[in-house]
Each structure stands twice: as C-alpha cells, then as structure tokens.
Length: 314
Picture (cartoon, rainbow, N blue to C red):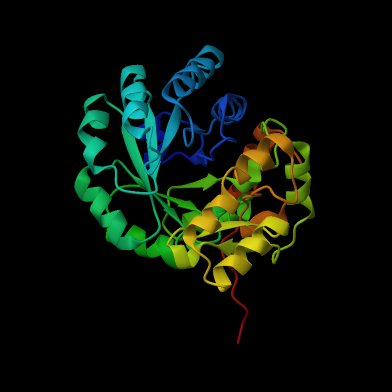
C-alpha cells in the first residue's frame, strides 16, 4: 500500500478519516492515526478554542500524523486557520468552498493541503493553487455532496491532475479500496464506515441506524437550495423533502434543519436528528474497532489486487 500519499504524509496506509463535524473528534482521530491511517479532526462548528483543545488531545495521545478538516463556510474559519497554523498541524483538508485565501498561510507553515472536490474543474483549480493532493468525493457519500458519482469522478480527476488523488464516497471495505486504486486514486477517505466503529464518539442509536440501513435508505435534501445533503430517511428528512417540494421559504427549511446533526450525534434522536450517512451504509453490518476496519480493508484489497482479473471465454 506504500505510495506517494504514504510517503508525503508519513502514514502507513493511504486511508483518511472523513472530517465529519461533531463526529471526527479526538477519540476517533487518535484511533485512525494509531492504526496507520490519517485521522482528521472535523472542525465544522467548532469555536477556535475547542479546535485547539482537540489538537492538544490528539497530540497527547499519539505521535502519528493527523489532520484538520476546515469547512470553509464556517464563520470561525479565519480563527481556525490561525489555530492550525500556530499548531503546525501536519495536514489540512478543506470543503464547502475554495481555500485560496488561506493557502499561503497554510503552505507557509509547512502544512500539506488536500481540498475535497466534487468536480474535475475544481481539482484542476486546486492543483494550480498549490494543493498537495485532492480528495475526489462522489455523491454517494453522506453529508454535503456534489452531483457526480465516485466511479465517474475519480478517473476523470486522476487524468486531469498530477497531484495524488484520494477517492471518497461509497467506500467501506477492501473492495472499495481496490476499486479506487484501480481507478487511479492513491488513497481513500471513509466517513460512514468509521461512524460505525467502536471509537466513534456518537450516540449508539446513530450507529444502530447505520447497521439497520439498506442501500435505498438515504435521501438527499436541499438540492434546490444549492446545499444538497445526504442523510438516512427519517421524520426530519421527509419533512425537509416536503418543504422543498412545496417551494417553502429557504428560511423555513433552514429553521427546521438547524441543530439536526447535534441531535443525532449527541442525543441519538432518530426522528428529528440529521443522520448523515452515505449510500454504502447498507453494506455495514457490524461495529468494529478502527484498527480492525483498516487492517481488514487493506488485507482484502491486497488480496483482490494480487488475483488479477479472469475474463470469461467467449
């Protein structure tokens, strides 16, 4: 599994933790980094002082590389950038916007920058800005999504840029890792699979909802507002979909959605919580330690890639 990403970031396996707000916190970040991947703190919704505390907690528990995900629409981002620069965090991933205005500060601090991109044109733009790599995320993923599938997006991004590409969206086991590598990616990013891990600091109800889900149990809301989000179907998402279909005022939609992720993560509210999850949830049937998830994934991918492909005789 050693490749450019492993060499660039000093990790054993090219497996990233998705920067999930309220979920990718110290316990899960530490577990992923200790297991040889790249744990990433989800800074979305965090005040700067809380982000600083999370960084300190990770550093106190492991000497392995880790990162921070910056959700660029967050009003705290300028202060969060100051925190990661002062802390000399090894890696930053970004989402929900362009990191252009922060790139000089981040690169000047020696930080490797991997923007998350939903389209090839954005990947090209990020390479021109000086990004060290990109995370090409398909619409199968949970949370905020784009419009292109992982299978279509990843090879096009790989062909369009010279920097390493990490595939995300719809990946949960070694088959997904092998497929991503076959498409030309040099690593993968997982969100939903790590949600259903022993170390994920989320309410047990949330984890059980993922285990019970099938391949059609997610819904995308907010597309007409320009902010599509994929979650498990529940009373909240059904109501949001109805508001959207009725053309309700965006403020009504936002008022209904606000606080939903917190209710899911911290309270286990299965009715009015935003249970963000990807379409791969239907494949996840057990809660495992992070180390086992990563090692099983790498072992399965290595086996599959060593077998080659046997096409049937016509």
